[in-house]
Structure formats: structure tokens, C-alpha cells
Image (tube, rainbow, N blue to C red; front, side, top):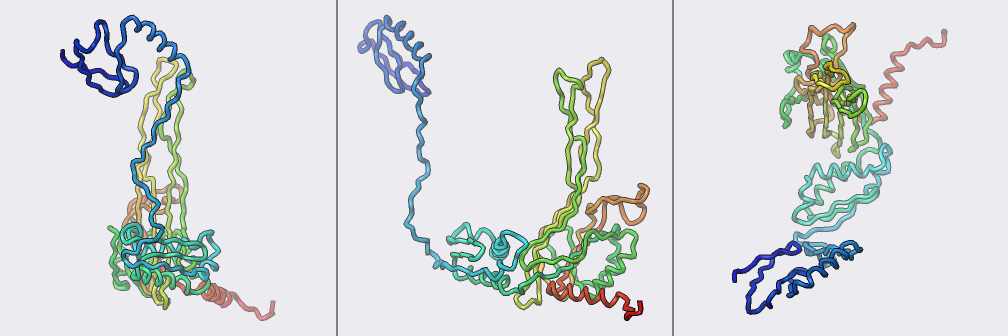
Length: 404
């Protein structure tokens, strides 16, 4: 007799039936996986009824078996020292105690360490730990890595116990031909980001360049030039405004009107984040810059047919935004007695151009495009900068010597 294949409960069992071993009028019936027993045909009807009744009753719930696929052990309880790692704790209270602008000033310590060491060294061999509370930085790594960590912490802890003043100007010029006269005043700097140019200027030449740019009709300045930033911390300046548009159409059944307009919103404008860190001798400064510009160039209309209660045809318009965006994320280092100038190229303007009476722009490039320029300089301690500004204001104000 040829073998028969029977399926039960999702499993496959191969049973070879033989006339010499199976009684007459007998057959095999499955009761559970991999178990069979001979039954008579007379008992099939009764057992079918019992099975039907059992299906109506509450059958016991079988809990799924949780099979551990990953081998997990408690370990030896000792940190690995395959590469002579060392555990050290750094006191960062002199830094975190004077930073009151954020609830977690220790995050800046972690961020700058990761910028110096990279991220992978803490998640690959050799085994390492980097953890910080508001008072203590805990590091477990090799002696070479501790040297890098100590240098970063010293630059933060030993810095002056006050904010640093930085001049950050974001301006746009409609036409990039300003470079023709300005290049002799500047020294080129290598940049990794494509489409971005960087130069160094003396502070005197920077003042001359800005005064010349202000004479142009296509010059615009987009922010206040002075920022007070704690050494190592981050600060963001932004100008974002929402732009609403008709995003889609949602059809409704058995309702009037038979559709709803779905609205969308896009944040348009610019955002600039700067994270500066002074050197121990305060002769140089490095900064991580993150800048993004988003602009809706235009809204493309699309007509969509919608159902109506009458036989007439009705169409509505939805809008598809055409976006222009620009991103910059790079780290620079330059002397504190010079000014860093970045040109982002002809990109979307940080703020949509607005002209009197809605007149178009005829001079200085296309509408919505401009050469974005970023001037960054270190102005020293905040107290000295504010005192200098106050004295300048006093010198400019008239002194009537009590005559009025």
C-alpha cells in the first residue's frame, strides 16, 4: 500500500498504512500533533458531536511558548581591560555652575568630546564609557582617549566665567559680483561643503566690506549682529513664518458638499545655529555652524474633478509646493583677531523679498535668489563688549554741562 500524507495542526506527518496491521473498517484519526490511534467508523458520529460541543464551550487558552533566541549571561561584573582602559572622573562644576541659560549645560561637554573623538570610538573596540551628570564627567577608555577628553574639558572649565560676545551677521546680496572688488581684501579658506566659499578678513577690512555692501540696492541684513553665547554652548537665531496652501481634496459620502479641502503648512525662512569654543590661550576660536534655508518658490496648481449633486461638472484646485532649500553643517577654526566670512552661493533668500506696491525686482538677480553671506567674529568677553558699547553711546550723546 502506498504511503498517505496527512496534515494536522500545521505539521506534516507521514504514515504508512498496511492492511496487516490496521483492523478492518478501521482508519486513523489525529487527536494532537504527531499522535494517532485507530477508531471505528461507528464512533465517528458521536465524537464529531462531542467536538462540536467542545468548540462552543470555553476551551483552555494555550500560552505561546517564549523561546530565548539570544544567549544572555550576567557577565563577570568587571569592566573589560583588554586595551588597558582607565576609569576617570572629571569635575565639571566650574563650567556648569555658571551656565544658567539651559537646564542641561553638561550636554555641551558631551557634544564637544564627540566632535573631537568621533562617535564610533565609544561603540566599538576597545570598550569605552562616556557619561556625564551636571557635576561629574565619567570616562572609561584608553590613555590616548583620556588625553583628548582632558583637553576639551580644560577648554570649557578654564574659560572665563562669563559669556563671550560674537558678532554674527547674515546678509544677502542679489548679485555675486561683489567679489570683484572684495577678493583683494580676503584670504581663502578650505571648505568641505560643496558650493560654499570661506575667507578670512581683518576686522578693519570686514568693516570696509560691509560698508561697501550697504551701498548696494540689493543688500539686505537679516539679523541683529551681536550675540552673547557661553563658551561651548549653542545658540540659534531664526526667522520662520508659516505658508498655508491647499494640499489635497478629501471626498465624503452622503454629505453636502461632497468634499473637504485639506490644508497644508510649510515653515519658510532661515535658522542658524552656532556653537563656539575658544582655545586655552584665547587666540583662536572654532565653531560648529548649522544653517538651513527653506523657501517656497511657487505653488503649482492642479485641477481635480469633484462630484456634485447636479449633473454639472465642478473642479477644485489643489497646490503642490515647489521648494528650494539649502543646508550647511561644518566646523571652522580661525584666529580671534580676524573675521570669518562664508558665502553660501546664490541660494534661496532667507526671507521672501517684498517690494513696495508689489513691484518686481529689476536689479540684482532673480526674484527669490541671492548670495547669502555670513560674517562671524569674536568680540571678546561680554562685559568688555557691553562696556565699550556704553562708552561709545556716552561719547555720541551731547553734553550740555548743565546749561539746559
